[in-house]
Length: 204
Image 1 (cartoon, rainbow, N blue to C red):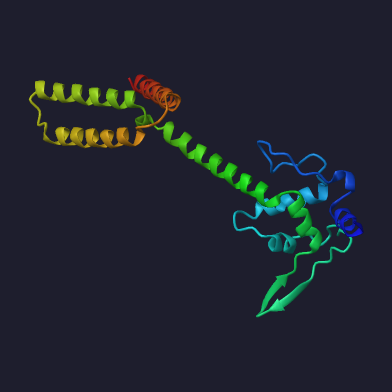
Image 2 (tube, helix red, strand yellow):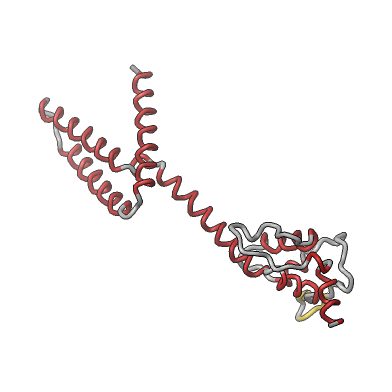
């Protein structure tokens, strides 16, 4: 029993030790989590998917207040400095679920990056089917006028066919997107259409 108490005091006061409950952002500071260990967790998270306890121990600031018995030992092996992980670090990482919290943090970062690139794509005018249809109609009208005036249509027709083929590819890639996403794409395309119309009016 004495050994257990000793281990707990190295992590934080007895009343501060509790298993964090699952939540939407488990990488944030948990209830009763000691500030020192939370700051160490933050540095652990910042190391990225290839993080390790040894790496975060090695990054410990020199002026950081050490825990009792928390001496960081280094040794040389084949010219490489190897840092040993103190027992208090290993126990804290386990008690405060560092591994699971890091996995949740990495997943959240991936989702954030994915959401950003999707937002960029959705805001492109040709992501909107309505915009593509409007563009094709505009090209059809231009071709019709060219035919009326007896102009050479070869290059215009080639361009129109190329654009139509590209639009079909885009439409295929957009299949399966939910209505909300498609509506956002249409709204972004509408803003683009208004911008083009305003520029056209400004020129005339």
